[in-house]
Image (cartoon, rainbow, N blue to C red; front, side, top):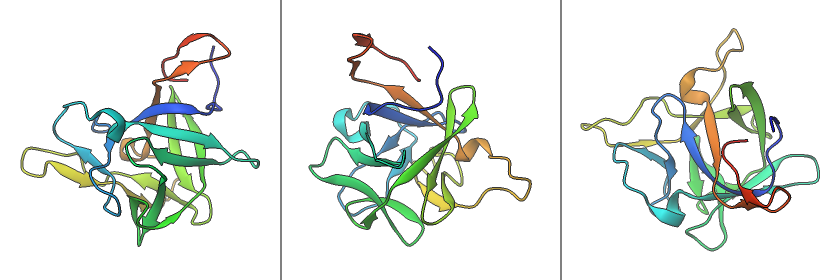
Length: 156
């Protein structure tokens, strides 16, 4: 089933440019994309909580009360103010994640490499032409069971 609205549930969030998943290593520290592809279990799993206006709160499963917020223009867990996010469908199963009160989007300014193994997830504006770059696009891979369908789901 093809849909642009993601359901509440647990997801891995993958950056289109680097194909790296978002990870959290410590409370109050930036969310990262990492060069290593080791699985971090609950520290790379995020729960989407649908809000009444169709926005989402995003919580990291590795930390109790680990809601995503921001500190300056960097995305953090519990170190900033929790923010509601809008997920704007960009096609091909990809989304732009918008901080609704900031009109800015999640971005990885560069892909992680061996020399720079960890890259912060930041907030940036869109390009002047309104197009999103691959560094601003994210795939949400469903990890829990979709109770309506009764089975595991891939990206929605």
